[in-house]
Amino acid sequence: MKRQIFVLLSLATLVVFLMAWAADSRKEWVGIQERFNARAAKPEPIGIRQIMVAPLNRIDRCTTCHLAIDRPKAAQAEQPFTAHPGDYLKSHPVEKFACTVCHAGQGLATTVQAGHGEVRHWEQPLLRGALVQSSCAKCHGDLETIKAYAPMLVRGRQLFKEEGCIGCHALHGFGQTVSVDLSEAGSKNLHQLDMTFVKGPHTLSQWLYEHFKDPQRITPGFTRQELPQGEMEIAPTAMPNYRLTDEEAQALTIYMMSLTDEQVPGKYVKSLAAPEPPITTENAVAYGRAVFDKYGCVGCHGQNGQGGRNNWNAVDGQQVPALTYVKAGYTKEALKAFIARGSQPLAKLDPHGPSPSLYMPRWQEKISDEELNALVEYLYRLAPDETASAAPTP
Image 1 (cartoon, rainbow, N blue to C red):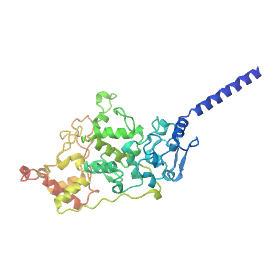
Image 2 (image 1 turned 90 degrees about the vertical axis):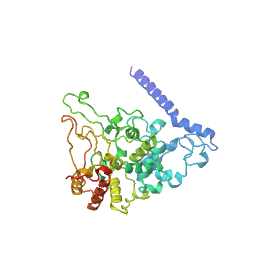
Image 3 (image 1 turned 45 degrees about the vertical axis):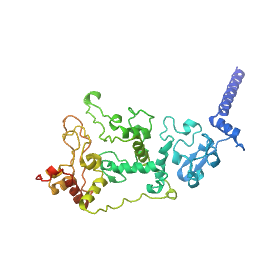
Image 4 (image 1 turned 120 degrees about the vertical axis):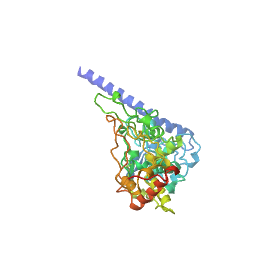
């Protein structure tokens, strides 16, 4: 009996061994390398190729399939046998940078889908197309120096400034705390995001893109009827819908993806972030307009202070008030005092509803007296002609 059991176990072991051998001989990467050798003038030995870059904590096996990545003559070949586009590898050799530091994905994987990071529980999928530009900021802090190579990244930063995002969001210690700090937006974990209304792939970049295109669709909030009894209503996101084009939304996504917590060793850093140039203008009103832009006032108050931003459940028409009539309502000193102290929390239109998401933050510790004086001069100039003679009240 024991001998029979031993024979059966031996046969079972042999079967498992043969199955493992068969499975290993059918590895996806083996077939890719065999296809490569079938067309190559000089066949390559079959085997896993691995790049180890200790300073970047990278172990990548991407070149197991991308065998001609550093062969310019293969520029016209199809994937995965094509060369890397452009001349990037001259300054970014794979033996020094590996692959995933720029392209993301799962370096240790040995199948195409897993290597591209397009599998469950892997939160850094391959950065396709222009998204790869977001990685440039890891080493190139002064984005203007790489504008020719990362135009969408630079455009995204420009849009961030133009739309006044800094008026609500902090970024590396600058800005406000009305909404979330974006200093490490590109390192968010997926469990921090609600993917319920995302139509595309459930990735961080897709969430950002769709949120920029239509914020209220992605974060619509909840009414009391939709929540358990006794729960308070949750307002929709206060993020304005800027009616961005697809390209603009993609540019902002790329910029957000560039803001990560990843730190590369100093020897990889090519440039630090350039300091903001000082405001130089010919008069106080122009200076004030520059201050208005610098601190992101446009984000809530709109271009030229015209207002129009929704503020759910706020008493003032559920909108952020326009600034075109502040001259009729405030003396200059009263307006400066209001800006310095801010106004929060705002009164609710429905006392039982949620607090308005937007409010006037306190600017006293963030804006200089010189800037504040110029800003008030600019705001006074926003008044239409018919209010120019109106008597201001404190």
